[in-house]
Structures are given as structure tokens and as C-alpha cells.
Length: 102
Image 1 (cartoon, helix red, strand yellow):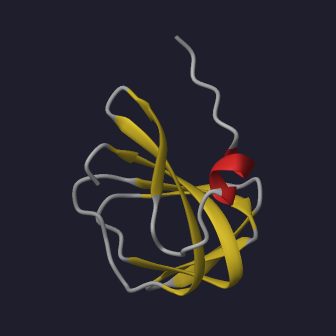
Image 2 (cartoon, one colour):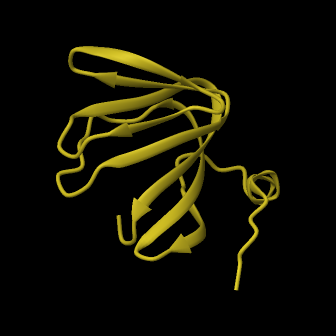
């Protein structure tokens, strides 16, 4: 059975920020949507890579040696164990692709 997910509709169902919502699952992975604005803390993921896809807005990902701006329609894969901090000057809408339980 296939699963069709309308991202615009999923984002319309909530307004809170920094609270990812699972919208689909595939094998051992979850697809989550999240609204963000402002800064998150420095952190890393020792067990898995992190995939961030920007649906709307601009995401800034800071690393200890620089930063990357990720725009709508782009994605970034942060390797496991790499310390980083995400932020957005104005609200951005993201999709996260992560192993279940992360």
C-alpha cells in the first residue's frame, strides 16, 4: 500500500516550533516535519547521520569551523558525531529523515 503525504497540509496542522511531527515511516526510518526559528543548542548525534531538508525558508547550520546556508529545495546530511547548531532568522519548515527512535 502506498502512502501519499501532502507536506503543506501536514505543516498546516500545527504552529509550535522545535517539535518534530512524524508524517511517514519507511523501513526503520521516520520522516518528520518541524517548524523552527531562532537558535538550537550545539549538539551532535554519535549513533547516526542527520538529514535536514528545507521545505520553506533558510536554515543555517553552524559547525565549529564555519557554517552552511541551506535554502528551500536543498538538504544537508550532517555526519554522525559532528558537532553542529541549527538556526533560522525567520521561521523555516524542515523535513528530518532519521532512524526510528532518534
